[in-house]
Structures are given as C-alpha cells and as structure tokens.
Image (tube, rainbow, N blue to C red; front, side):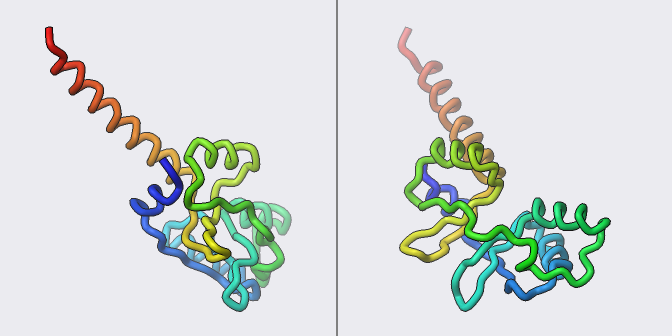
Length: 144
C-alpha cells in the first residue's frame, strides 16, 4: 500500500495558517475542525507545520498561556515530508525514526495532503481486516 492510497480514502482536505497568525487562533481552528495539525503557508509555499505538540510545548514554556504568540515563533520549520508513492512500511519507519506524527505529502514541490500516524494505523488495520476475510473465505472454501 502506498501513501497515495491512504490519501485517496482519507481525502486531501488541507487547512493552513499564515506564519503571522496567532497561535490561539490556530488552536481554535484545530479544535473546531478536529485536527492535530495545520500547514503553515507563506506566499503560496509551505514553510512549516504547527501540530498540537508544538502548541503544548509553547504553552508549557509560557505558563499555560499563548497570549499573542505568533505561529512563526512555535511552528516546526522544514518538516519531514513524504511522497505519494512511498510504501506504507517505509512511511511508518520514517514516522517512528523522526518522531513525526504528521507528514506533509509533497509531489513535484506541491503539497497534496497530510498523513497522520492515525491515518496510517487505520489504513493498515483495514488492509489486514480485508486480507483476513479473504484468507478465511479461501480456507472455508478449500476442497476437502
């Protein structure tokens, strides 16, 4: 299974924020949209990611308040990315080795989606369920 197959099922809805935006507004957007990350765009180009991890770290460093903190102050710059044709096992390895919970999917220097660790886990589980059903059907119909 490849990353593009996960995106096809998941969809490639992207929400972004400007680096000059306020972190508290990003938190509201993430909470309202049930997202764990936002892509940071400047002049039509991805320059970073803001995830709940960066937000929590910023809050911990500031006594729990974000006040007027800008996205650019806390975002992850130049995040690890993946390509649509990357195999899921390689993607899982990359996510584990880098600690990334969200990876932007880039093709020809264009952002085409974001894959989360949850998306990967769900896709792998569904693929295994399908394979199990197929194997059980095969065994059930095995000639005696």
